[in-house]
Structures are given as structure tokens and as C-alpha cells.
Image (cartoon, rainbow, N blue to C red):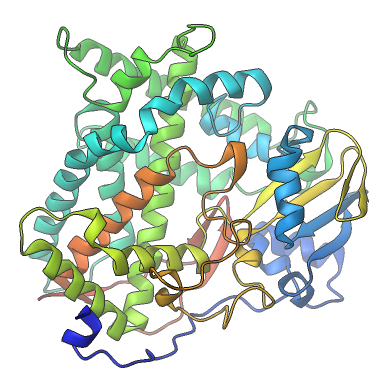
Length: 462
């Protein structure tokens, strides 16, 4: 008998459509589009971008293509991926935080990093890190027990929790000492330097823009901070002949399987920055949106709680038993993909779905658009976790891209899914979450799909 039958959940569930920004008018001027892009790239897309397989336009003198066709996406991200690189704007925005880490490295450097890091993110390796995850999640649940009498900023709490998980899995110690400083770095960069300016979009990559100056000084401070974290972890040492106990030791031990090369200190610092930042911020954002959606859909929230309680009755919470909670996470990342846009620039001329792409042209694959495409999804704007339940018709592999696809698919995808599923089950299994004020929370596309404000939730013990 299913959980739905035991708890008499209505079938079909109530249709919930979360708020989303209005679609851009077809006659939007270049000036208006630029102003909207500064606020949120999501506001620049009109109705055609949600319907057509390919939308061709112009972007600062170059042709641009928005791809919603799975075959076209496969061509760019898999079949001919070496012909497409990150755009100059992406390098400008990401490099000050991530350096030459895995997320933005190119060519041989990227291949070396990917081969070297891959053993640290196999399902078996991730399994060894689950106790670190559960420890931080349980601490968060215990902390929330004392917050049931007032408003709670769950977004900030999710950021602290995922940062703690990142610190524990990376270094085997929590981030109580350095967490505030790290969050301050992230918030400072996101508020002041991550939004592209006009010259970031217009000038070639090797031409400095006014924004590059504060980014340069930010990077100097940031790399000193990361180097200090690495030095502290090195000083803690490693037990002789013991297997690696965290990601740092896995990365220290990692060698390129073809050349035997290890990471340099600078490369190690960039990998640490990439894993901590990319890991904690995107997962915290996904958990925030999942909690927000569950306040809009109390029936689904109760089903998650029932599954979590059933899974916890026999002891430790196990990921494999949380099928519906995993479906909620998958549906959350469909509606609010943490990486809302994948942008590439063509290195050389190509043909995509019969359309000529010239060197330097911009090719965009936007999970935000792809996941809401009106040809490829039934009721695409509604929150319907059952789409991802076992036995349901699954989407085309190239129509659902919460972690990208192909050679550059997110190396930490399995880690993130387990972390988010366990955290959501623990929180909803222990607390009923509501929003006293029903002001809509709007998604903003700036590096990640962020909320336009942090609403104050209320939680009650179950």
C-alpha cells in the first residue's frame, strides 16, 4: 500500500502554480533589455523563448541562438562540445571567485582536473561523506527546535547548513569559525560584482572593464582567505595509512590517471573554492525553493512528512527510501534550476539544426526556459512532483538539465541530490512549515536562480 493511500491524499493533487516574472514583450528595446538583464536575465525572455525550438537574435553585433530542441542541445554540449567555450562575460563574472577551478577551466587544464577529481565523486566515495551531511542536518534540526515561537529566515539557515556540510565534507571540521567570513564574501560578490555591466558584455575578454578593477581586488582578498583555510587543514594532518576522510584528503591524494600529476597549491585552492561555493550556494538555493513550494502546497508537504517519518522509524534516514522527497527536489530544480542559463561561444563555424553558427556567435541553453517549454512539458508552470516518480514518463535527457549534461555535467550532482533530499526529509519530517505572509517570492536570474527577497517562515513541531 502506498503512502498516499495510507494518508488518504487526494488524487490528483491540487494544482499549484508558483509565481514567476512576466514574460518580456516581443518589441522590447535594446535599452530596456539591458536594464532588465541587470536585474534578472529571466526578465529578458519573451513568449517565443518558451515555445520555439530555436530562437535566433542578435547580441552586441553577434548572432545569438536560444536552444530548446534536445537534439540541438546534444550537438552543442555532447557531440561537438569542444567547439563551444564559456562566453567572455561568464569568465569575467566567475573567475574572481573560482579562479581556474573545474567549473570554468578549459581544454587540457579542465581534462586534467576532471580526470583527477572524478574518483572523489563516485557514488561509493559520496557514501562515505553522508555521515558528515547527516551530522550538520541534525544540528540544524536541533537549532530549529528553539525557533518555533517566531519568524524564521529559512534561506539564511539553509545557507548556514549547506556551508557547514561543505566545510565538514571538505575539511572534516565545521565552519563555525570561518562561516560568517565566507558568507560575507559570497554576499559581497553577489550584490556588487556578479551582475554583468554593459562593458562586461561589449568588450573582448582581454580588455579590462571598470568592473574588473574591484573584481581584481576582491580576488586578492578571497584567495588569501582560501589559502588560510587550506593551510589550517594541512596543519591538521592525516592519520598514517588511513583512508581519506574528507574531500581535501581525496584531492591531495588524487593523481591524473594518465600522467600521474597532482594538483599544485594554486590549483588546490581553486578547487576548494569551487567545491565550497558551487556546492553550498546552489544546494541552499534549491532547498529554499523546495521549502517555499511546500508552503504553497500543504498536501505535498504532508506527503513528504509521511514518507520521512516512515523512513525514520527503522533507524537512520536512508536516501533510497525517500522516493517522493527526491521527486520534490527534482521538480523544484525543474521550476527553479539553480543554474538557470548555460551560455557558450562558438570557437569555429558550425551548423546546429540546419542553422549556420559563425565563430564567436553566442549559443544559449537556458534550463529556466527548457524546463518550462510548452511543447515538452505537460502543465509546465505547475508544481507536480509526481512527474518524477518511478513509473512516470521521464523527460528527454536533453530537456531536463539541472546539472548540465555531457562531458561538463556537474561532477557533484550525486552529492547534491543526496544532500538536498536528506535535508528536506529531516526538516519536513520534524516541522510543519508555513508562510504567514503570502507576498509572492519572485525568482531572479543572477548567476543562480535566487529569490528576490528572503521571506520569514514559521515552523511548528510535528
